[in-house]
Image 1 (cartoon, rainbow, N blue to C red):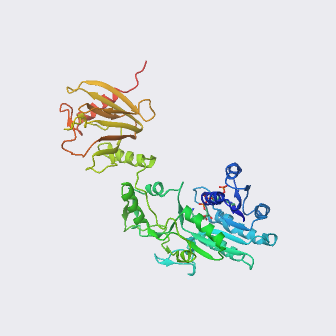
Image 2: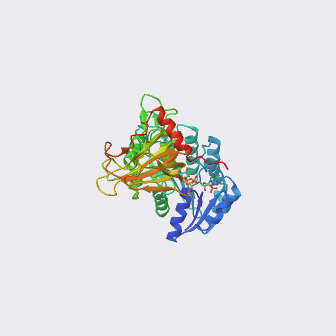
Image 3: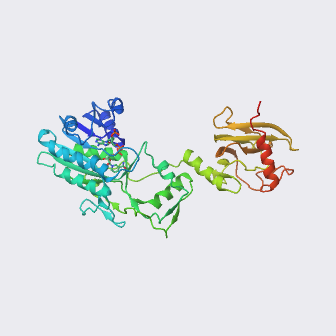
Length: 443
Ligand SMILES: NC(=O)c1ccc[n+]([C@@H]2O[C@H](COP(=O)([O-])OP(=O)(O)OC[C@H]3O[C@@H](n4cnc5c(N)ncnc54)[C@H](OP(=O)(O)O)[C@@H]3O)[C@@H](O)[C@H]2O)c1
């Protein structure tokens, strides 16, 4: 089949890639960006520049197409206004209506719309049969766009509107997107349902719509609408990140649309979801967001440092992030374990700069080492029983530390008693003296 995909973003590109691998269809792919043409030519038989509202360009892109897939969306993360939405969705379909007499071979139009046309249903279920009630200008434009396409239907031309859930998948993974909310305080109770869809199921459903000649509106969402609170809880379980603190007495403004979109029709049509529900991998990304969050906690802590454990206390390998801000005082200590060698400690600086001070039992400094995320020395491993302390040489310095567990607070460290207790004025002066050991020396 000759197929034109209008819009080659996250979904359009994946769809082209899928069909390219199958090798059955002849694909034309469009973009508004000249610099993307080269890459798109590797995914499709033909890549063309197109603003979908431009009649001549749209006619050229669809000239011999038997199927048109409309996958366009306002590009970029910025929030666009209703007019920009109209220019992206509704105007191109007005243009398309005018071109249809010149496109007699066009047998099917598929459009990837959105469940946002349903508006709010107070958490209830919605399906393709309910009357839509867009709750804002954006939803209203999408509804108008759908209606324009419905008017393109004829005995020889099928029209399929797929109302997609929020897309996730490779390149738009959920963990980094949700992690931004971890540890924050948010209004409401998070009891708002949303519908999600893996990119590969969006590709699969479009493919099924074309192979099956679907001629109707179909919700394409996964089997399990979930609330924001539930999703965040799953994130916390999978990653060990901090939970969201919901403030149930604070109203959410503007209120989020709350609905559960039914995919019963999708199942009736025989489509089998590859990702029927969201499964979050059990992993923690040690990314800028996490380093930033631990650093902020350190900044607001009276100790000027904060830990983020990747392990549980009872585990035998302790792995944790330790964020230090200038001024934090680490009383000199060593780690002693019954098993020979098990008191080692390994530090790797992930962000900023740290000063390591190695001492003898009488408090004499025998070695200093600057550890810097940019090198040349990024980390060290200290042997068991080696007394040491650390100072922060930059703001937001973060270490990855590894040592033998399980953690026993009373037996973990053996402090050098001649150095002041943490929190004292003397400790502050001592920390400054150690930090000065690392100041650049003027010629
Ligand atoms: N993302 C979601 O969560 C979600 C949810 C529900 C429905 N959908 C629907 O799924 C479809 C695909 O979304 P996506 O996430 O893949 O979008 P995307 O990654 O933002 O890609 C959008 C594509 O549309 C092109 N485009 C933008 N304005 C255009 C215009 N006026 N004329 C022609 N092409 C234009 C862009 O051109 P450039 O190549 O120049 O950037 C880009 O190729 C859209 O129809 C969207 O409404 C998405």
